[in-house]
Image: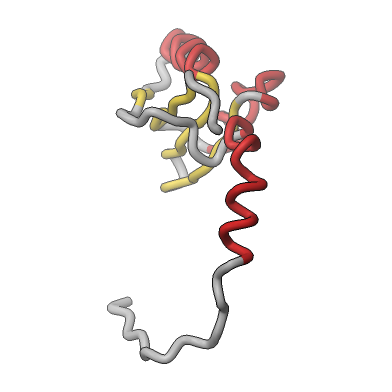
Length: 104
């Protein structure tokens, strides 16, 4: 049920810079991941992502579209929320039985 035409991009800029750059496109774009202080992911409608990347390039901010076919974690996934919630409601939740060991 997701609409076609979504994509994601990696951008080498701080999140606050990207929030400013997204500006009025906030209904069609999102920042689903902040990978580092100067590395974020932008997700949304392909035309908006590409326009944003072009604007950022004018300001010498590097960015690159990711090779994905949908705009995960963006406003474009809203049509799938009901189905996802119905699926999640079927999952039986319980405390974990396997111990977890972290390497950090």
